[in-house]
Image 1 (cartoon, helix red, strand yellow):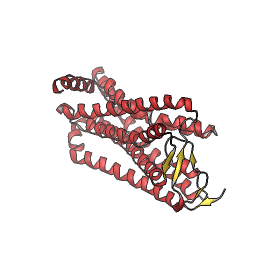
Image 2: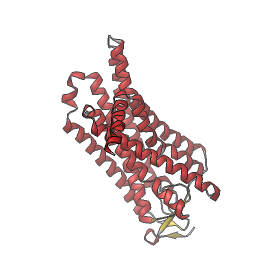
Image 3: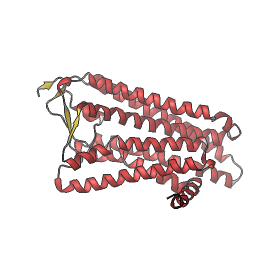
Image 4: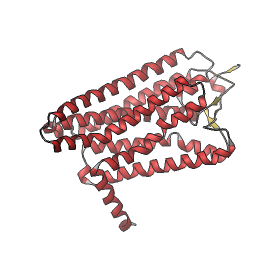
Length: 312
């Protein structure tokens, strides 16, 4: 294939999940519904936490940030797909594609870090309850969130700047509904060895270190809970961790599922369909997990919904 210098590239083509015109309205309706549920569900979580002073604790502060991040993560990919379907135009500009790569990595990385921070919060709350308010003070909470954001931004900029050094071929079709880093690298005509090594190295670090932290936290949590004398205390401790464990399982489970799917199939289109499970679905389900499994959140959401008619 004839290569073109990256400065001459004006746009990529996002092929989406299907090329069948008859299925486009169905895909549009499905993703629009999922996006609206994601936005409204996470906004409801943020408003419920903000309006209830009883929820102004580190655990719910991190949950509020997680909900805001879920909105941003979905917004980085889904709206462009919906616009392309409406316009019947598959194009995305070169700069727009790089921005999408960058923001998607930022928000996925931040999600990963926040889930880890939330596991540390549960570890301190259950294993060191008397020191909880001292350890998890507002300053530390803010520092943990800012540090997570900085790490995610540096991670994303590193990959994005490495893409800028690549030259691309005349075939600029991305068999995906958004600009995923791995798919963009496949279109390059220049050597991508360094890029791929960086992807694998950072993936091991970003998955291994946080997951090790989560496992470490929950091993100590389980050990502490089993030592509790009362069954009521055990139930309360496990119930506070149930929602977080569900989110952890959903996040890492869908990510692992997509990795296995891409490894066992040669079809890029099937991999794109599988990627919906980690790029769209978890952000939609997280509000339901926390609102349905957490008694305090249930009460707060009901209070918020009860006040809404009077405000309107």
